[in-house]
Length: 128
Image (cartoon, rainbow, N blue to C red; front, side, top):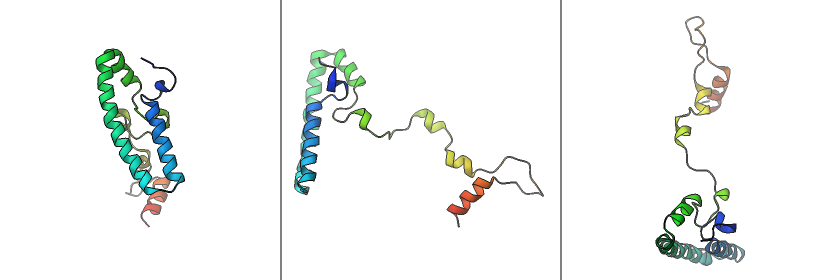
């Protein structure tokens, strides 16, 4: 089981290279049909790799399972992906934009609550 080089970044680097080449060819030739065919190729490769990975798990057992957990991406290196998922800790944090819009906790002056100047200016930009 090879786990070094490109296989340290993606589980199927040859297929990844094919996809990049086909997308590049589609863009260079300005062919929408080639791009659609590349999409179909991606679907076929996805189905093929599922079968291949099933066979690899049967052959290599836990070693391949751990490899799949360590190298989570089939075709696109994790280092190139944009972070889209939010961790549990990030969900619990208060958004910074919300904090700037909250009222100031200082004591009331003349019966009215004092407001933070940044919140007022932000609100005036949001709600003219």
